[in-house]
Amino acid sequence: MTKIILPLILLLTSCKLSTDETNYFGQTYPGSIPEIFAPGIVSVKGRLEHGISFTPDAKELAFGVLNEDDFSGVIFHSKRIKEKWTELKIFEPLKNQCVYLPYFSPNGKSLLYTQSKSDTDNVYTDVWIIEKINDEWVFPKKIAEPLNSTSREANACMTSDGTIYFSSNRNCDEKKNCHTADLFYSKIIDNEYSSVNVISEFISTNDEESVFISPREDYIIFCRYTDNETGVDLYISYRDINNNWIEPQIVDSTINSKDWDRRPFVSIDNKFLFFTRLQIAEKGLTESDIFWVNTSKLFKPFVYHSPHDITVQVGEEFEISIPKDYFKDIDDKQLTYKSNHNQFDWLHFDSEQMKLSGNPTVGGVFELTFTAIDKSSNLINDKILITVTNLRS
Image (cartoon, rainbow, N blue to C red):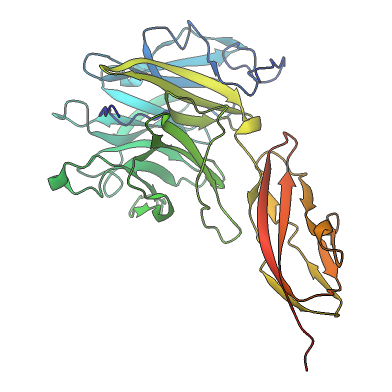
């Protein structure tokens, strides 16, 4: 695989949908196949764009552009005034800095970004923040340690309660020249980010970076190297009922590609995914464009509250409640439930009441599969075991 050390930059079927709702730079909404966002305006052929972000009211956008010679960066910005977007220009408050990865906070009053450390050839970056006061962006400042460190911090984004998620290679052993990044988070306490925690569930031998966290902190999207055929892909994980992150799943193949798919950002209404697709050749990065897609193939049902395996007795009737929140889906509250209970003539599943009942006629261990299907026909299966024992002697 071609290895490129870039400043970690926040990047966050093709049936067209017409709408008069949110104005995303005047573009027609995409279908379930990714399309280049605002071609010739935002995504310009031959220019290396990355990491777009919108304010929650979709009245401001910001994205980064890389210099292909030294990978220095600038941030472009535009505002929507009376449904008309202003000319894209370098973000005035940061125009003389080497900056990347803009990310608007969920309340639209802050902008996270990364800025090159001095004397590091634009490889190492810190996380900075700039505030919006009286409709003006002012007072950029670097976030203090321990969120920043002597290592490379990047890809910062924020939840509604101010928690910052970011990637960092601070856990690397510098003697081994390690560049692998992991994902971390830092909660704001007494107006300070005083501690940092790694997301241990996601640690692997590959980079975990380009992180996007939902404002409610109920799902997370990041990128990871998959294999030599598809390169870097987007992955998604959700929280279960115990607030644990479930095993990350690679995002649907209609979204990921054989190029490098990185820098995710999801609109505040969870309707659109924006991301950056990089074309990598033997000589390095040749093209970088911002894509967008609707989320019909991004969000799928997941196991939120799995029932326990059960034990019942031959000849004894039983009725067990299955959790009504067994499965969840970010963009679909009305999932369809099915099971393979018809394989067993003594078993019945009421999907409306979420009741499992029966009167076993034989002993043994039986595997029951539950299926949840969403409005976009995405589905997930989960299994429980029913152990049927003989009657007590």
